[in-house]
Length: 509
Image 1 (spheres, rainbow, N blue to C red):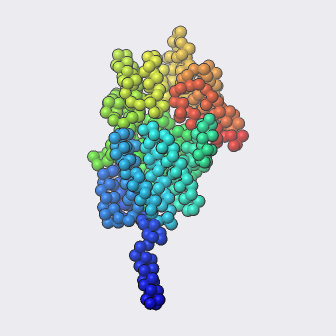
Image 2 (image 1 turned 90 degrees about the vertical axis):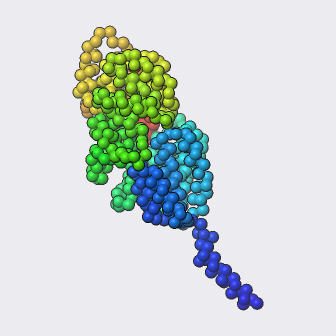
Image 3 (image 1 turned 180 degrees about the horizontal axis):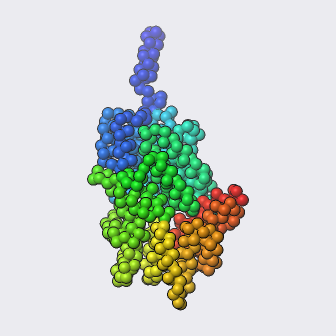
């Protein structure tokens, strides 16, 4: 009887070992099957429906594979971020609990176990921020940060984790000083330079194989955001853009939408306007790709700086047709600028009224447009033209406009401050550092009690100039002055860049 019982127990043990491995190692595994791999390629091309179809096949043929679960969430995330449609957000949110529960039951020995959970949490944190669900978003950011930190300690050679972890470290490092207490309470730790280095390390890994294109585009997306929002030295963004294009042998046409967003965004915001226009207009477009309305807004902005009448169509289509939240007020304002430069004050006022009515107040550009709509102050057309030309990198044309403006009699102190700021920017962009520093200091002194952004950005630019001259002590001093100024235009982006600059330079004083 004992022998029979022992044999039976052994049979049960063997059965459990070979036929129910999930009892020991987790119910679900992580493997890049052929459908999932093809879906990743489709996602990089924003072919969202094709990706979902492939992932549906993967789940039928490989029901215990968790990779399709993660990628399905990625597809939802992309669509939410691009469309900014709240109904879509709530509909897709209903899948979140089930997906996270499934991922938590995965094989804990795989690095993808923590990675996929962290990515899903971060994706939903970013999506929630679009709709002002900040408390839940912060909780998800913390979960993602802790999972990625643990993963990096356990699997230091697992490079995909460095993409999101580096992004989080950079964001944490650029949090304004007055909120650093909250960062410490939440257990976050990070700095801008360290985060960028982690993302660059991950990008180098992605370039070792064509199979890593999915991760490469994620690196490109995050690094472009960081270079434009946490680094006041535009040359870093420009170098990154050209190096990336050279390594990937990319031209200005037929870029994937995500490449056009990242590279076109850098070109647009660093004075390479014609390059931006070519990237944005000649990007890949097809009926099976998800439409990205924001790329049309970017195109309209670039064409406006180029004094191209086609700007009106792009800006109007975005302002009038986009069903999301952000940059709608900004689009109406830029459409108003278009009409003002054409001499049509009536249409200017009509568009500015729309800027005060439609859209949300989440991003700096929309806040500025709203304030301007309520102030009812009509910009000086010459200064506006100088601004747009300078922003586009057409510095000689901008200087000619300013020279004519300065010859006017009875210039108001209100307009004089802006004109002096525009002059400082032109000096700076032309590489005339000494003249730029003198001009920026003048703007800072005369405008530090003005609620517009001129003094704050002058202090930021002075910090950047001193940093490039190898004077970290003076750079830190000027970066630190930005946050204390009482200005309300572009405050979030300017203080974020100043904080990042202060962190970079204070350690080198």
